[in-house]
Length: 314
Image (cartoon, rainbow, N blue to C red):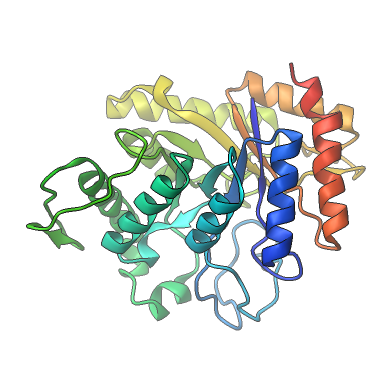
């Protein structure tokens, strides 16, 4: 099993110096990935319910102070040598797809092939509207089309596409990504629609553990969802075995009362949870190791996870 951490994108940890220190510690202790969340223009006051809390509230303030995902991925690429860079997840319809394809290819070139493109449809209607993205109600169709455009630009010598949202032909696209045929596309989301998209279009599935409506907070729930993904692959005529299976673990909390939820309790409990999820198919776990209080606590959290969890996963 491979492990990663979530890069801080907001204050107080989301600074250049902290980003470098946390990434360096991640490589030192043997983490494989950094996952980078995506918001561009969040509103002052959220009117849409956040899917990953019980009451729909967001766990951040309304300042809008958030680092942009692809810029941060490029910065971390330059500060590291081994970490794979996961957009976790990039809200695909928020950006012009031609520019996005170029930026992603550039990151893959500059990182020497370390990019993983985590892709999602998004949940925040107002952010779509202010950025002039495709209609929120059509975001799923836009994701499907933009991913097709990415593949066309990344793999064709004479790229052309004629769709609902994108029309392009007669232009070269260079540089191509280092990874062939292209960087892996990990499809985020926990809903049946997201699982169907992963089955049809993805190289991996990359959900979050604590979706309020589609929770994956026990190994049994994760196993059931993986079973649904396998069935969706069968229906789509695609190969389930090609898929990497991931999970974003927001609720990692050593010492907290378990109350039926995985990734809480003692380090031994967490090791047992990871082994049971691994038995269900999980092979890429992104753990919320950042501690908001301080850089020192975050670095200590990374060390403790490596020393008390990772070494016991053989």
